[in-house]
Amino acid sequence: MEQGKVPGWNEIERMIQNCRRCGLCEQRHSIVLGEGNRQAEIMLVGEGPGADEDAQGRPFVGKAGQLLDKMFSAIDMRREDLYITNVVKCRPPGNRTPLDEEAHACLPILRMQYALIRPKIVVCLGATATRHVYNPEARITRVRGQWLSKNGTFFLPTYHPAALLRDESKKKDVWEDLKSIALKYTEIKGNQ
Ligand code: URA
Image (cartoon, rainbow, N blue to C red; front, side):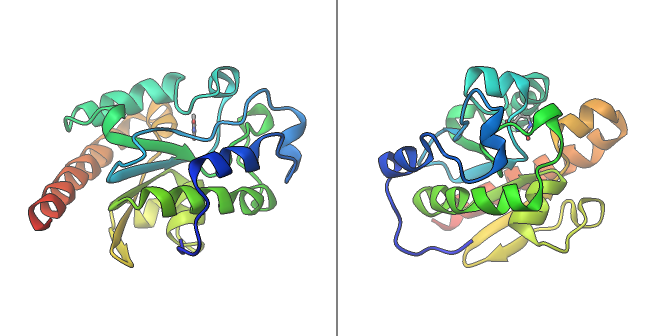
């Protein structure tokens, strides 16, 4: 993600109000920008709001979100330590994967969030975030757990918590990724 001239948070909020840049606007109830610590060193990027998030206007508040909170509390991190957002800010109907055109319409917002937060670590939760944030060619099963450094920020793909709810066998790999995130964070803190 590139950093150019960056609008502030108020401007971003103004830009997305009544957004009609893609078809997801037709059925949404909320635009879920993201939440957490805007000075966080760790940014989490999911796919897009689900039904609970669309109803409440907050990211990761449903079952997957509860698991996400548990995962990060296992490495002693709470929501207040993180910034959490998604590739698309409006719910894809039926929780389908966002289309490329929907993701591309919304990615400028994610880039602006990234440029304002300037996180040291970006965790891509699942295949969609991995493809749109880490590497368009990447397959989550191949690249999970592999750090990529771009312009001083470290990017890590891991499984989406919803995938863990469907397949418990993925938990072992995600636990390795969480330990790796904790270690990277400690290293970064040590170098500051
Ligand atoms: N799944 C996501 O990818 N994002 C959310 O905010 C909730 C569920």
